[in-house]
Image (tube, rainbow, N blue to C red; front, side):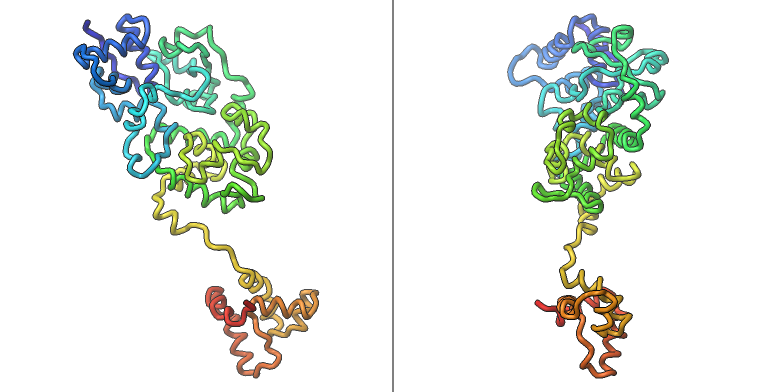
Length: 386
């Protein structure tokens, strides 16, 4: 049997493209197409496992298989983070791991835009409409329609007009929410650029930003988690379309699909996109940090917390200099007991100057007034109470 071919259209989802190929060849199901192509490729020999579906189709239409996956599957979004640096070069290995992995999308229906269908010479299913959390067409700004039939992609979107649902007005309105709008930009870039990063780079980018807003990275602690922060900054109605369990998550508890991402867990692309949208005020900055090489991020990684002596020194030093090191005057200004101040200044490495010769006292005060905080830290350690 001689099959007719058709090249994929711009951003056409693989499952929809396979449905078109089925229709133009007059087959009842896509499974029939797969079996026929596998039989043709192997010359009727049944030895070994069949090629992955994306490979069968790309070879059939004469398309580079790696590019076919990158440009027409949801993997550039779903699997934006790789297990290690060696796997970041291509999505082909991910697609080859399971027969139908390139056909997977994470929504409960097949989404399309009626305006896109109206202007397309050949109506087709676009990948961008299948992105989780996408309820408005990025090109036309109108609410998307969706089909819940499991065979939706087997047919053109035209088949389902009049027999589909429309996104609710509430979800449509949330498209204008600033964090949701940032998420949309980030998700579209993930999908269009087809770049990958390793899980360590991704978790480092999230961790650096989480520390700046006081979030907890570890499993145990009292500070808020990343999932707490996301619940606080995004509409719960929108979030629960992706993670229904978030509605009942208690503050401070772990939600692994989100909180695991900052601990080097390979997470779904939607987790990274939502986290970047919440943590960064600018989508371009968030994307830049997310894909920035790990070697550059580590240079700016979290610094050890201040010791008690360093913290007290930064608190007391301005008042110490103002009063020329006179502890009674400092105690009066700070309104604390003299003995308590004496313990603090010893812990801070700031010496008592009452019995010090004038010339030496002046030298110490001049140094403390002009030296950098790092030099003062080094100098003061000999006075600190260990």
